[in-house]
Length: 262
Image 1 (cartoon, one colour):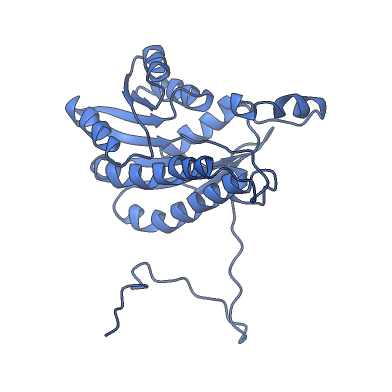
Image 2 (cartoon, one colour):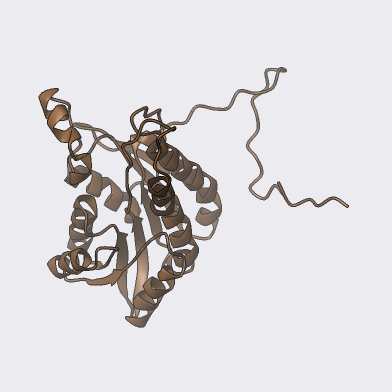
């Protein structure tokens, strides 16, 4: 029988490394993926797993991930899409376009390409895919609007695909932490400390990710804030028409954009 496995992208970072530890603690073989080859190897060695170099924004690189998993005879029961980058740029006029494209590539393309490659494997194991999003995906972030845009896109992606993937036996979730105590804070950490701003602990974010990955939390979108248990996020409904009737949910197979003229 194939051994159950979990994939963690961004596995060389703070959250990815802790999530890998927790998944290994549940008996899963962890495949650690990161563009940082050495960091991925180090995390894999710590948890008794294996590693694979991966630029999540390269659709062809995902073939190597699939080959790695199938070549080792692993059964993929969980995939954590944790790789992410921030910009920290607030002015659209001076926005660095290469940074903008990289943020979209990692934060959005990395999830789309990953799901496209891994859903067949997850379906075989009736597994779960979990995306590390952010509170920035649920609210405005004036100091980094592009980062917030990418995280809003991920929330829309998860909510859109979750029902159809559920019908195929695959769970899809997004975890939205507030500001997390990681190296990504950079120079802002000093100011946050001065303000005594409460930060989310890395183990708490990892625990929420792992809970979704193991099927313990069925929520599509989960919020993680300091001092609170993971909380399912309730989205407000869309206003209905002028008749006052609620707007019905769109059919999952509505053929929008499929019509051709002429």
